Amino acid sequence: MERLKILVVDDEARMRKLVKDFLVKSGYEVLEAGDGNKAVDIFFEEKDIALVILDVMMPVMDGWETCREIRSYSKVPIIMLTAKADEKDELLGFQLGVDEYISKPFSPKILVARVEAIMRRTNQLGEETLLEASGIVVNKNAHSVTIDGEAIDLSFKEFELLVYFMENKGIALSREKILNSVWDYDYFGDARTIDTHVKKLRSKLKGKGDAIKTIWGIGYKMEV
Image (cartoon, rainbow, N blue to C red; front, side):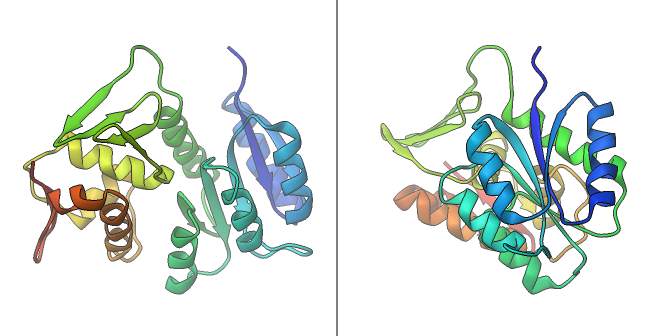
């Protein structure tokens, strides 16, 4: 089986080597870039990069601008690395379509675990898995969503959130449980992050978004 490619973008060569060594040991092919401009060039030259690990503070083009550039053309999963632990930065990352947000210093083993969790979700094998509810049809393998036959464009994390709701229809889900399940690790940030994603998801689902009910003081529940 061909190894999946991961693009690691950081202006610190030592950090790139550390991340690369752990990823290579886990069976991934790793490409490196020391700044945002080079990262964008590599991303569009390769065309089959499965995931991007992106540092925020870099010369030439920072991580935010690099993320915007990639996101304008691709939904490839992006893990953002940052030395800052500011809530505003974290929320900005999610608003730009970042899938994971990790503050430095971090455990390389945890980083690899998060990479592998994303890879499992985005590279599923076997027959198509369909979820249906009230005219919403989710194809988990094709990573596609239609509403009454019309294709709906969702980000990676919005898609995972919708799948989780549909797989747990009628069950009240706390914000903490949603974060731990959809993000696939113990999340220690602000649980309000989930509210931002739910708001965007409801909007994109148009009239069907009303199926995602707010359970005050707890979280959310999908009713169909």
